[in-house]
Image 1 (cartoon, rainbow, N blue to C red):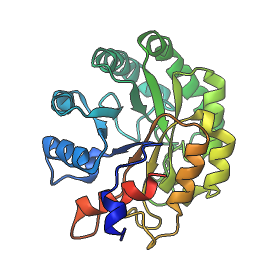
Image 2: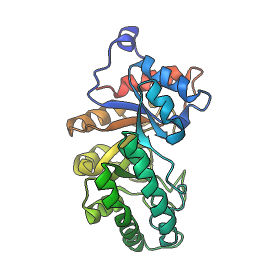
Image 3: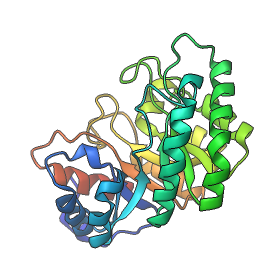
Amino acid sequence: MLPASAANAPLRANLKHSVARWTFPKLSVAELCKTVKGIGFAAIDLVGPEDWPTLKAHGVDSSMCNGAELGLTKGFAGREFHDQLVGRYTRHIDLVADAGYRNLICFSGNRNGMDPQQGLANAETGLKRILGHAEKRGVVLVMELLNSRVDHPDYLCDHSAWGVELCQRLGSNNFGLLYDIYHMQIMEGDIIATIGRHHTFFKHYHTAGVPGRHEIGDQQELNYPAICRAIRDTGFDGYLAQEFIPTAPDPVGSLREAIRLCDV
């Protein structure tokens, strides 16, 4: 636990902080808005259009928009989903842009027996159909790296190298990766070195403790202050969002402590 003096000090705000909406299911969106403002930051991740008016009313940013996806398993690596995805993302890109937001999440989907290189080619083809529209509207499509070992069996975009190659093929500042530190620790480790090598492709970051996906303090194996200093030192100007599942009796206290740990 942080000392009272540290807990009450203003945030340094060298990194922009956020929190995933789904990790606080017992709070309404309005209550979560008030909570984050009380802690000292002003953004919530993974929020769709139905909740954007509430965020705007509280002066809170939608740091990673969602709602266009077909789910985690049906993504751009599957050609059979392209027509549906193109229609949904084209409409959602307009919604995001019209609301004044920037980031929109997307997913590779599952392998389903597919060779990873074929999945890359498929994802490139599908994303190119919407990338021009995203560029025109100033929206960044952000594909999340997830682990396929524990939480999302068969997910294709499960290593940073695969995601980086997709970024290189697309060659657009309006496409990048959501580097989920929890997921990538499970799949490949080497977190700080990977951030150093590939940070130009990382548009957004998520946190959680390993193992378990819970609080990010010293009960788990990742050194989040060191990781966040590495992110800060790249000049990153996007969002770092807490995505752990609280287990403590005071989940808001867990969030407050996590923000302080990452506020380097």
